[in-house]
Length: 158
Image (cartoon, rainbow, N blue to C red):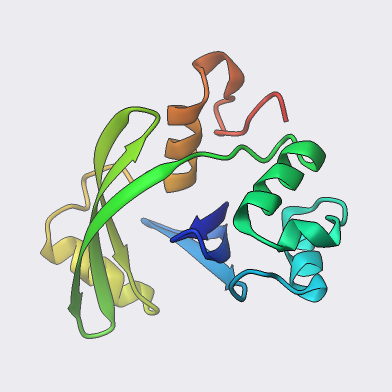
């Protein structure tokens, strides 16, 4: 899942293996725009696509335009978020109000480097019974009509 944060900073998040009941994510951040050719090449490699032309790294608008032309499986989705952050030790809770495709949702994320601390936090908050959903899959389901999305959350068209 590629993200453009605050219109200036590019980030890619990848969902790794599950550590039940947790989802494990890794992320790669990139320098602010304009992106160097090296950073642009690394970004294209992360997406599993072909090399992007050097001008794709000039601005976020250039990047989105080039991705639309060369990587049709990449779907730009405008997301608006406001968030509240809470920390205790190495664990962080993030409550977000998210607006996507005219719909809004509240989300809760428990984050931390130690899975045991995250699980203890989930238990302390008594939210372990709630389903753990992938944020990326939620975005795809909100942005695409149902007939374009498979059960795994992948875009059939791309």
